[in-house]
Image (tube, rainbow, N blue to C red; front, side, top):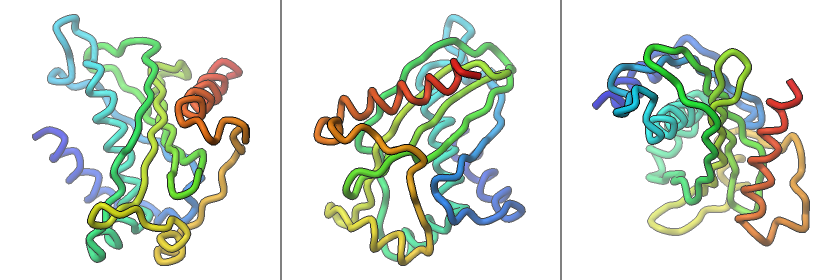
Length: 184
């Protein structure tokens, strides 16, 4: 129920925010750890990290215009694959940022990086693979981008030798994200 309320809040807040046309541009969202996010150790439950990442994707879908297009054409963009690394735990009522950025494209798959940080320190990082589907069939990404007026040019190309191996690609993208925090 809490996730639905936060999605409604993000939808209402999106009216006062600019539309996103470049999917490679990073987005940042600030949240704080609610008491219901806590596990028995009084840390944010690992599943809640994924929920906050979903909220960031939800905002990306709304502000890019993809959600409106998807509802009109009865399509969706499910997450096919997720790799996440937890580095630190968040405690009660701590604020944190979820940074979201599309970082790679392989065929009709997009790879989204979500990082959760607090005061410049990495707490969790995830790479999610998404595809656009309609009635179980994968749609051509170029057609969707053209129809929605969106553009995506990845910031850094992945090592071409890894493209055939999704696991290796996910690991490489995770490492790239972690390296950004170590350099800061």
